[in-house]
Image (tube, rainbow, N blue to C red):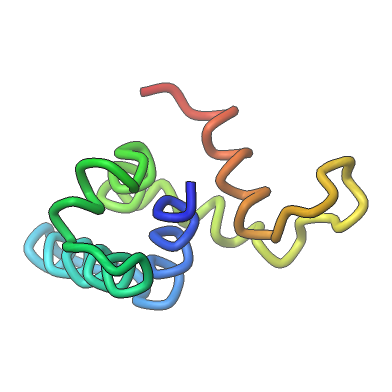
Length: 98
């Protein structure tokens, strides 16, 4: 869970790319940020801690519509105790099909 949430935050911080090569580089950069946070390697984080859907949405630029909503997520929505980023991950997992 934490890996997926941190990947979402990392993707927001590093922004979008314009080419496939740049997207691959930025995915690697985001995974390194997650790995640093979790104290693991980027390979292990990608394989076990980051939901592949979040990476796929980033690579095909579909995650933008969700990240644009991040600041609009309501605090009193029945999901007490979750951060805005965690609520956004839940929304992504509920709305997207793998």
